[in-house]
Amino acid sequence: MKQLEYPYDSDFILRKKKAIKRELLAREGVTYIEKKIAILGGSTTSDIKQILELFLLNYGIKPEFFESEYNKYFEDAVFGNPELDEFAPDLVFVHTTTRNIARFPQVTDSPEQIDALIEETMGRFEQIWGALADRFKCTVIQNNFEQPYYRLLGNSDFTNIHGRLNFINRLNDRFCQYAQSHQNFFINDINYISAVYGIKKWADPGDWYRYKYALSVSAIPDFAFNLSHIIKAVYGRNKKAFALDMDNTLWGGIVGDDGPENIKVGHEDAESELFTEFQQYIKSHKDLGILLTVASKNDEENALAGLARPDSTLKQDDFIIIKANWDNKDINIANTAKEINIGSDSFVFVDDNPVERALVENQIPGISVPEVGAPETYIDVLDSNGFFEVTGISEEDIKRSGMYKANMERAKASAQFTDYDEYLRSLEMTAEIKPFAPVYMARIAELTNKSNQFNLTTKRCSQADIEKIAADPAYITLYGRLEDKFGDNGVVAVTFGHEEDYGNDKFFHIDLWLMSCRVLKRGMEYAMMDELIREAKSRNITKIKGYYLPTAKNKMVKDFYELQGFDKIREMEDGTSEWILDLDSPHKSGNVAIKVN
Image (cartoon, rainbow, N blue to C red):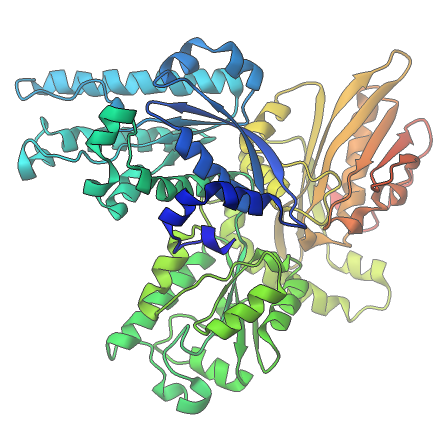
């Protein structure tokens, strides 16, 4: 919803929150994931909850909330709360602020006393985080601290150990260290958000003493928007790719009219430097695993000439696909999505032209088309929208662009063969298929949240969920990593399920089965099934049950279990189907070319 994208009108969101919620829930074709979120607050949180709900619904996340009583965050976390236990949150958000720091240094305190105060304050929070991790084994999000609204020591408040600002900065540094050393723990950086908003406006002392609001009501949308970025990233609702216009977007001017020698990029003048900084910002996303593509109305020769300028930061090789032609841009984006096998709604389309933006937004449901404004606001608008919020940087992320390029090389190679099995054998594929390992937990969680098409049950999991399942002996878990002569595809397949003993029969239920579309039609699903059957038999399991839950995006796997030799037990009106494989019957593998482990 456009009203919930930056730049938004905070007053409008606050005034119309009920109407916005109704409009969000009335949208057609939106598939929600449902998550239980506990808010443990050190101040009033009711308005935060209501506005956060809007942003999450806009991302396709339908939250159910638990709120602690006012300022009972420590007690609920450390000593437990039966209602919270029964709620069993998927995610806990600890909403504390500078107002919740019990004691600041006094001018008369010695350095040793201040160090002890740091340890005492940190110990209290570590007690909270440890208790939550032990009890719920779920994702925890914690605010850091905003700067105080007054400075007793003036500018020395920053440097003097007795200053409040110095004390807060030391605490924030310790929070940072904790987040760096703990999985499933994330910081909601209100130190940054409040600075951007303006410290003087961020909190109203009157509202604190009247209503126990730790931040002003007008700041709540900015706060909730920032928090929602972390939650949607944890549950895989980030975008995956840029689709970029070129003229007056990547450079100033029109390359076809002005010529590549006259477009504005480089360091010759202020306008050129502005576009160069934007190119640097876009290029830095490539290392985060964000795919860069072009959708531009241009002759390809001219487009490539612009990128070939020595002072252009972005080069042709930085892009997975360049569509520079005179087709409508929505068609080019749809074709690009098809070629690299991701959804068209995974793109962020960036174009200076409002007419082009409106066309693409109307033709491609779910695509993000930010109102980028003038060139000097491009970065601010893209960055503030948090399209690609980072909760971790994996080896897969860094290699992703190269992996997609290798996949396109494979597609070219396949055209040289008339026998498909012969083509598969030519790839010289080797697979590592093993139980979930700590080193791949983040990637496995990422796959459960990003895979839509080859996903039998579309079960979404946080890393904490994955770790909990991996530690449960009643589960069988398998990841699949695939390499071939073109390169390493990384972890591309995941399955897990649980055992159930019926006396004479021991069943295994497949709760999740997914595979990255990067390796479709390579036989990896057959290699995975072979390993699952082998592991099931080793546990004396007699039958495997599989489930297909249809969505708008996973029709390609409707017949998955039939192809694997399962028998259909039943099929409901909505297309949901259940399948069974009797392990006493011979199983014929469909894997013809992958050497496993």
